[in-house]
Image 1 (tube, rainbow, N blue to C red):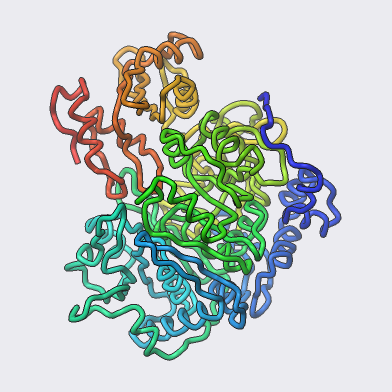
Image 2: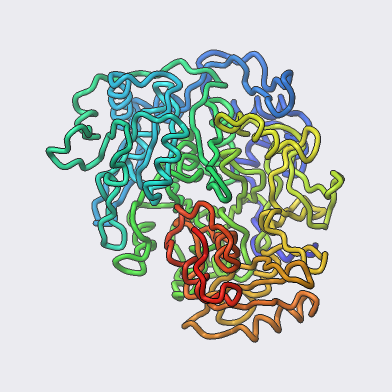
Length: 631
């Protein structure tokens, strides 16, 4: 695959990165040699990561990896005593350095030092213990991105309980499904917060849910609910439960696209080591950096960014509001006011900024992180050239809830082309064809040829489903479910979920490939491409797009696709929308587009930013003749 690099670091810039300093420490001269070493010498590589990232084991592990029960059930850092919260706050408990910087939409802002964070989370941990929370009990964090969500997370982890982050935008049914499934008896939440100037009521979502609610900003006279900061002020400090490497720490729920959401279980040792590796080497995080990932504590990137930044002694920034309220330059002001140096954002957010011509450089940012969905070339270049002034590298990463980390990641130490990723360091990734053969320069299935530390230890109460989902397609190989291409230089490109692949007259095409073509039409903001059932072709392309000033570009889109890949792929449906259905962290839900248009059940749509969008799609669908899509 021909690449034109947009970002080419100087040798001085390469040598200054954390990843190349690791290579130098190992006596390795090039990035490729470092990646080859990481894949071949599993024990040696992860041992060096632990040392280089200064991960603290309170008692040593007996082995790095133990696959005696089978590859899917590999244990990492066996018998080692380690606690995530000790590594994020405990080892810095005497430090006055800033651990959290925060701002709320109403303008309130401030900082919390590591010493203060240790004291607050320790006292809150003591409160949990007094409430009867034991090691292994599940405790929910149903909060927006805020200092309280960080404090709550660490208070749970330090006492050996299991943190269950829940997206702050979920409705009652989605929250209850996760609470019931995990057997949760205690919940951290907000009374309310503000988004776009409007009050978002959270506490009433928990009405009739039988659990103890620990609430930030609790009004007086709230019955059986407990006040977050009152507990901190009145409770005794708790240290750190001596948890083992394989003890569960965090349970993250998948989005539940077709049925009941699945809980992925992550442990103290493997999750911490891999998260710290990724934030240090992919984001190039140093102690004087401030990381702001535009996400939610309920999504993987929330705890990932908190744990990674603080474990490295750096600052995490939290913000609970809209980035364009009350002025469209709120993001620029946040970055300037709080000294944000590493900014994580989604392609959808970039496309939104681009559509509003918000193209001033984000001064002070030295690394962009991105994840959530595949890029289109134009938006990647716009971010690089406009917001990054053609100087700031884009560390594009891709993984998932099920590995609380990344299989693919580009870094500031390498030349970067639009949309590119690179193989994950120590993750043994590749691309296989249907028969299990490794393929280069062809689109196939993204896989990991062996286990890695942060892979889920199973799906909560569903061990058979875990094997079926990840390990059943190829023997001893993790099938991630993404459609990807690996080139001869080790770079990767994503083409959407493998189960999103469209078959037109027996020919496979990835939705992102078509979306790239659509993005080349002037006036397009974003698009979603899905397969629509067709009596003759099996499936035909359905292209749903949003345009500048709602201009009808259907004819131009059809012509662009036909010219690019031939009339055999001529779209059967080209539909203009005012909005695409997407989650609040910006991920476009192609499944919802397709099912709303065809009248199939929508599945779990509790995470949608605007649940009215699929209703609009169903109403304009010629396939439904005015009928509503099923909920």
